[in-house]
Amino acid sequence: MNGMEWKMEAYHYTECGLDNVLIEGMVPCKDDEGDDVCTIPNVLGLHRVIAESIVEREASMTGAELRFIRTEMGMTQAQLAKVVHHDSQSVGRWERNEFAIDQTAEALIRLLAIEQLDLNIDGKTVSQLSERCIPSASSKQIVIDGRDPSHYKQAA
Image (cartoon, rainbow, N blue to C red; front, side):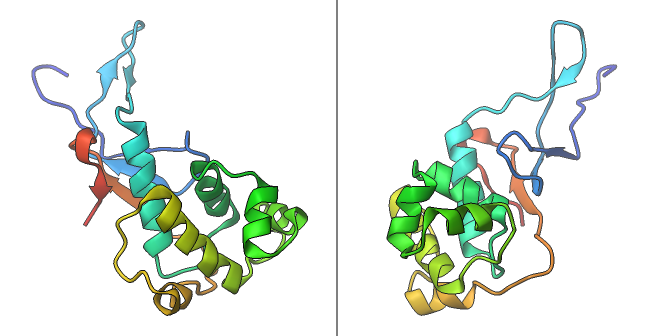
């Protein structure tokens, strides 16, 4: 580092099970072998911001995002299926991207996530959340401002 503060442009955070999460502004540290590594403090806070990003985004969830939200809520596929009035095989197929997530079920899942995870989301009505369940050809990057790990937030 030669006296200069080195910052990563963006850390690709795949440990959460998603391939579309970037954390900006993280400062790496050295491991025992001298390699630059990143530690993720306040993982719960980070996962909360990722969940908020997914729930408030104006595009359908991907299967991996649905699995992330479901596991953050501490639910099995069967438990979630019961809430959205589908069978657990449907939830599994949605999570594996074999079928598109039913839009009505997705709106209900978003409401459930807001409730279960105590998310801070603008536009919490059923109709507002339903309008966000728009099928999309690709998943959008989730970019998190990681400069202050005690207060992760969506990057501007």
